[in-house]
Image 1 (cartoon, helix red, strand yellow):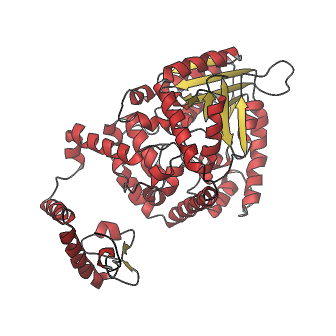
Image 2 (tube, one colour):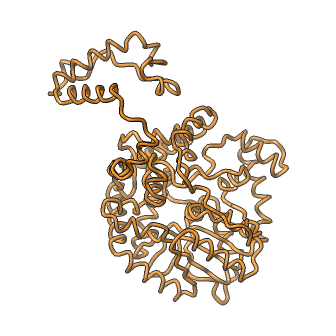
Amino acid sequence: MGAPVEPSDSGQIDFRGAARRALTDPLRQGAIGLAVHTFRQNRAAVLSGLPEWEAWREQARAIKAHTLAHLDVYLDRLDRSVRGAGGQVHWAADAAEAREIVLDLARRHKIRRIAKSKSSTTSEIVLNPALEAAGLEVTETDLGEFIVQLAGEESSHFVVPAIHKTTPQVAALFAERLGAPRVEEPERLTQAARVHLREKFLAAEMGVTGVNFAVAETGTIVVFENEGNARMVTSLPRIHVAVMGMEKVVPRLADLAVMLRVLPLSATGARMAEYVSFLTGPRRPGEVDGPDELHLVILDNGRSRILGDPEMREALQCIRCGACLNVCPVYARAGGHAYGSIYSGPIGAVLTPLYRGIDHAGELPFASTLCGACAEVCPVKIDLPRLLLTLRRRAVEHLPGRAARTRRPVGWVERLAMRAFALAATSARRWGRSGRVLRAALRPFVRGSSIPALPFLTRWTRYRHFPAPPPSAFRDDPTSNEP
C-alpha cells in the first residue's frame, strides 16, 4: 500500500499569505477575472428572460431544507433503493475511511488503472494521492482537472478547475508533459488531450466519479458534465465507484427536475448541462455497456456535526454550482488556491472551517466583503453573509489563544477610527458633514478617476487603486427624496 497519505489541506490555512502571493500574479488575475465576468454575463442574459427564476430558487431551497430536516429517512431509503437496483453501498464516517473503502475495492479487484471524472468530494478526501501511493495509475478525465493534474496543482473552481490558467500556459504544459506540438488554439489543445485520454478510458479497470444528486426513491445517481468524459468513466470500466457527500440526496425524481433547472443556470448561465447521466445500478443482462459492479460511498466527514448545528445547517444546502465564486470580489482577486481547500469562495469560507475546525481555517470567514452578492445569486438561497458573520463571531469568542498569537492587539488608531465611525453613522447630519470632510481630504490624492496611493491605506493601494470620491454626495442633491 505504501506510506500513509495525509490530506494535502491538513494544518492551518494562511489565507492572507496566499492571497498576497496571488495578487502579484497578473496572468492569474486576468484569467480568473475574464472567466467569472463571462459567467456573470451569461447568467444575467439568460435569467433576464426567465420570470420564473425566483420561484425555482424557492422550490430548490425548500427541497434542500426539507431533505436536511429528514436526512436520516432519505439516506436509509437511498441505501435500500441502490441495493435493490443491484448496487452496493458503503458508509464512510470520515475521509480516511472513505479512502480505505476505495483502496480495498481496488485491491480486491486487482485494479491497476483508474479513470476519474470531476469530483470535489474525492478531492475533499484527498483520494488521488492515496491511490497513487498504493501504486495505482489515476487519470483525471475532465479537461480542467486533467490540466491541473498535469501541472501538479489543485482545482481552483467547482465548475472550471483550471480557471486560473491561460491558453499559452496550457499550451506550454501540454508540449512539456504530453509531447504535443506547441499550439494555442483551444480546439487543437482539446484534441491533444482527447488523443491522450482515449487510451486511458479504454485501459481503465475502475471508474471513480462524484455525485451531483442521488434520488432516494429510485437509487439513481445523477452526474452533470459538459464534456462526456463522465459517461466514459461510468460505462467502460468494469467497476464504478461513486463518492457522495451525504447531503447530496434528494427525495424524488420530481425534486430532481428542479435541480436540473437551477444548477446549470447558476453555474455557467447554460439552460441545461450538456450531459446528464442517470445511473441506476450496474449493467443488466443484455446491456452492452456499463459496469459489472456499482459501489456508492456515502461520506459524512463532519456533515452530521453541521447538520446538528442549527446556526450552520443551511450550509449543507449547497449544490456546488460555483455561482457565489463568480460574483465574489475576493475570490476574483485571490483565486481558489488561496483558500487552502477544494472549497473556495464564499461557500468555501463557510464549509472549510466547519469541516476542518475554526482553529485550522479561522481566517476564511474574514475573507469576504459581506457585500451580499453571493446570497443574491445562490440558487438554493443560502444566507452566506449570515453564516460568515456567525463564524467570525465564533472565531473571536472561542479562540482567544489563537487570536492573541496571530492577530496584533487592536491599537489606539483603530479604536479611535471605530469610535469616530460610530459617532458619524448614528446621525444623518454628522454623517453628511463627515462625508464632505473626507471628500475634501481625499481630493489632493486623486489621479484621473481613482486614487493610486494613500499614505494611510497602504495595504489597500499596494494592489489596487482606491476609488475617487464623487464631487458630491447623493444626500446633497436637492432633487433627492432621501431624508
